Image (cartoon, rainbow, N blue to C red; front, side, top):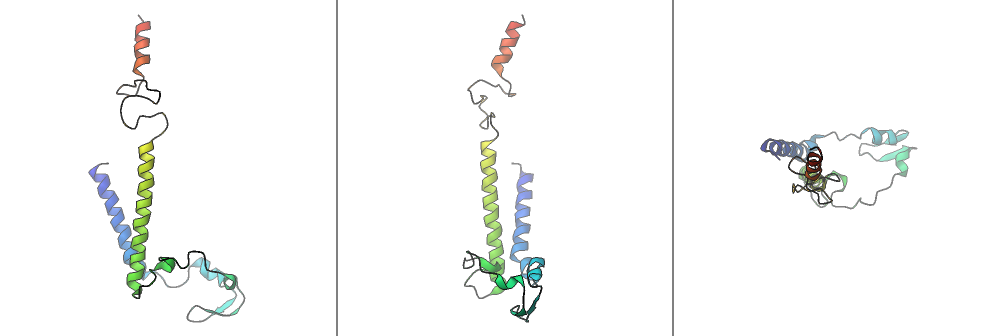
Amino acid sequence: MTKRNWGFLLGGLLVALLLAGVVSNYASSHPDGLDSSLLTGCTVNADGEITGGSCPAQRAEDHELADSPLADYGIRGMDNRFLSTGLSGVLGVLLTFALGGGLFWLARRRGPAGTDPAGTGTDPAGRDTGPAGHDAGQGAARAGSAG
């Protein structure tokens, strides 16, 4: 990977960390489209609790990971909401970057079938492919049969 590619990659990571760690705290506190559509038909108080009516949100249940350390856009046990949201965003970006980078590294190392990722000049059958990737043995055979 060239220096320019590393700079681009690290710049993108820095922007993602900045957005997740700082800007995410200024996102809208109002429910998104899905949440608001699920509340259609219900009466909601200022705290966002359903006080009456009938809507799909009344049948909502917590998912299996509701008690996980990073549930609900924060870190469980932290009292400072700004810091909790920012740190959970940064951790999410770093985990995603590590997982994605690892998968790309594995895919790059493996390469497509029939190639020589190590650059040894041989194909999977052990034949010499030469520096240009052509089968040197077949080229020599053709040259010998032409004369």
